[in-house]
Length: 393
Image 1 (tube, helix red, strand yellow):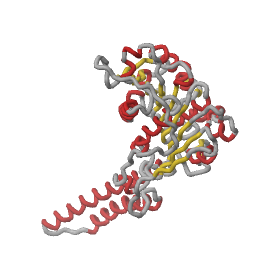
Image 2: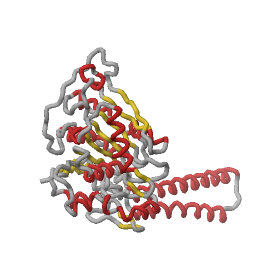
Image 3: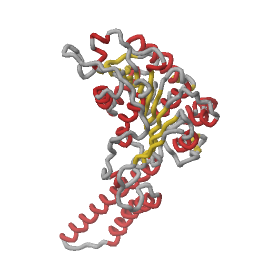
Image 4: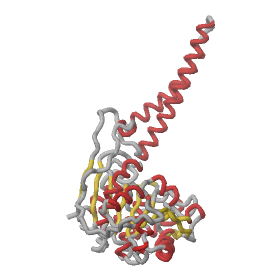
């Protein structure tokens, strides 16, 4: 049976939901009603003493500032309702801070890892961030950061090939930016020190390869994102660094769009990747540009992880961990059936969970708080890496 775990942070006081449609409408109406009241006030206001004029001026200023604040609040509520960044007032106010779990949320088989002491002569006792330039992408995406663990620089390991994790960030992340905004190196270092995983290399891949084009890690029209990863990045990395060349040494993971990329590539190329994970991902491509979406329509079924699961086209060797959140509108969606708008299928994490939860190839951690934000999911990076560790990471 598929492993599933629920993890919930503490809750807050019950009040009108931050995602309430009525609240959003009420605030926007107030934002326009106040300036209207201001105009009426000016129309009926008469002359008076100097102090009355000052009071009227201050009153006008307060009305204008209040109207602006309400308008900004209304726009925020509308955007937040559409995208679900914050799912409660306590979430918005920071009253509930996501914390890393202190125990295994899903079964993790402890395996023997390689203990490589760090010598005093090691030139990089904390590891090193290197980089390779990969052709086929725009300049801001072509430079791919690579983190090398300190054990990589031990003289005793000069002939050792290390496991490698290919990590893909959100759609707007370059490898360089994602390397800084999401801390994978810290948890990786601690897990390696604690001998919970083997020393491994991390490759930070960008969420797109062409400026302004959300290609979702698939080949669509002239944008060969999938080919770039599978046929250019991986061979170049394996020729430049001492990493494993076989399936058993390759792992893949991602956040948001990168979570979809990881799920798609690990299930489409089960002989290329040993195991993978997704943080707040979805399970079919969701293109930002309608032109690209129309171009990709004939390829959509072949790029849908949900479709593969429904048709039982998932090989037994697939091992994938999904960290999902039913409150996260951008990944989970409305539930069992995603919304179709303008010909595009919306977020489908909920649908994927319901069709895949009975399959041995998939494991789930379900959260019950927070929205689609990095801070909600990063506490589960360490757990995800440990889960990969039982398969050789």
